[in-house]
Length: 563
Image 1 (tube, helix red, strand yellow):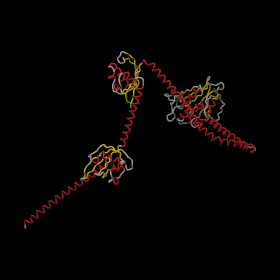
Image 2: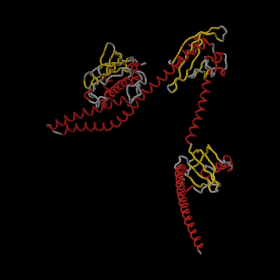
Image 3: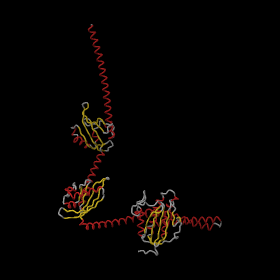
Image 4: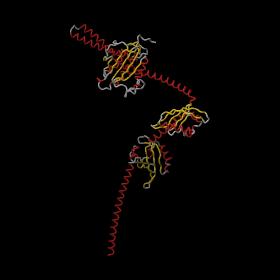
């Protein structure tokens, strides 16, 4: 019995030991489970936050899982895409079949990398993707994991580069073709002074094929003494944009001396020396070459002069008829009709006052007021008449006109703008629309509308600069017309700061402008051409704090003879 109790006690002790061991095993298992869960959580976190889209497929190519990057890229949520067949991501079923059979070998693969394919998003938009795939097992299940990266921009850039490469290759072929038809020896060298292009005439000059020249230097093609001279001159191209020098050589070593003029033009790419283009000119052919060049220059010059004349004539018409013609024609038409009605009724009103009302201070006051109204109506008529004349098509024939009257008409056209900018004086009198046109007589034979255009161009240029002065009372614009010997002089003077000394000598050249925000620089060139066509001169200079424009036209002692 004692033995039985002893055995029971031993068993109880063993049971306690086993319980203690199981408790430790259970604690370790729980701890290991937590660690595994934490690792799984981290793996899921890394999986979802990868910059690559990941998709896991089963053995039948059904989608088992995707990460959040995949959802953002394709537009499908996890619930929408899990369980779907991967062919859903391809643009067509044929593309999927090709991917499965050709690239995946119908599933007989272990890993695939750098596979570029066109896939489709939920929005039905397609894009280029780079795929990496690898098989793995999980609890006996055969799975594969695929990474997807959007490479549409890379493919587009690659295609663009390929197109540019084809374009550059075509341009290179075109350049070679152009070089081959040039009758003089022409060559191109890179920054290392290697020949990278040459004309057929250059090959003939050296008695070598193009393959024997391209990629070579002067030390490969010429005797050492001559090569040293050429190389020293090539080095100077680092500092010189253009080079011309002469050298006497023996052509093909046959004791036939020729004198060459070598001309070079430096090429710069991105601010760095990138080689140069050169030409050999045999001075025995100089006369022939000069005659050819002079002929070409004359042809180009004649062509450019014709183009310039047509262009300037067109600009004159556009400036005249667009800016003044359209506006003036419409305004005069719209104002003249009601003005005629007002004028007629006003005249009848004056007659009624004279006939009906008895003589009295009130009647005299009314008549005085009617005279003021009459002056206003006549002033409007004068403005309309001026605008009507300006809107009419310019006549090419010269007319015997009073230049002072033309000057007043141009000032009237600019008055609506000028009165807000500066008080203009003409012969030291403030300009007013009521100034009599007969006060001065300076008769000349000119193209009336074109000369008016000259005055308007100069006035507008002065107003554009004067408006930059803040205070109205500090602005000054004076116009004077007077006779000097056999010339009529019209002088415009302002205090707008003058013309920049750098462009003053070129102020009448086309496309030379003093304006920073407007203008294309042809106004004064047009004005100069008009003045020259009317046998006059135009000049400008700075005086005091402003610019002076002076136009001189010949005095006409008798009416013009129209031919």
